[in-house]
Length: 232
Image 1 (cartoon, rainbow, N blue to C red):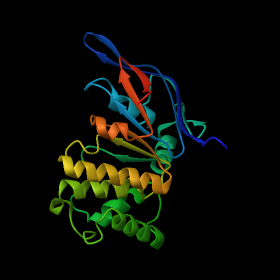
Image 2 (image 1 turned 120 degrees about the vertical axis):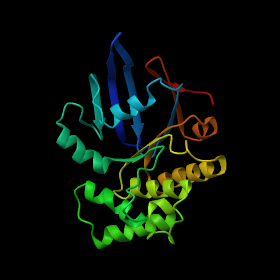
Image 3 (image 1 turned 90 degrees about the vertical axis):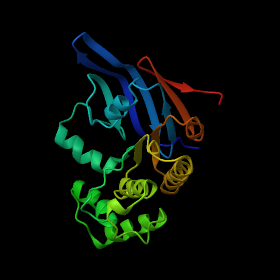
């Protein structure tokens, strides 16, 4: 049986930040490979560098050194414009806060990701957006504005928005962090189900041990090193 294709691979990733007391090395030679359809969780203490790692993997913030391969093409050495153009179609993002545009409807917020990706909003894209919103249970809320949504509904919009460009990878940074326990479970289960349906790889940062253990692979970030947790 053929091994799934590599979606993302990083080699010798190093990232430091400058402070008055000197440089603080946050990432210390990270090696990591993600395959198609894989689900991965990353845990670690607050302030250990989890968001820094996600920003480096997605090249929202370039590492100081190291290589970042998206589908076997190295991008850390490329210009910001080329990175941004590729990222819009390669990665869908879900954050702890939904970041919906308050003046746009639910449907328009999902379609905004298409425009940001440099594409026209075609009839096919509108159909896909409606299909995704129906799949996340918001078929009756497509014309609603964000102020009228519950926290769980807003995160459902964020999930649909992350999937609209049909990226091979979703990066989710504490997507249930602001939600109550029942809503968090609903959102997490929905995200896992949709990634499986679409064959989308997932990198999830979470403090919830139950959610972490339900991904295919689990990692811990500690002292700048990413280590896979085995035997769980």
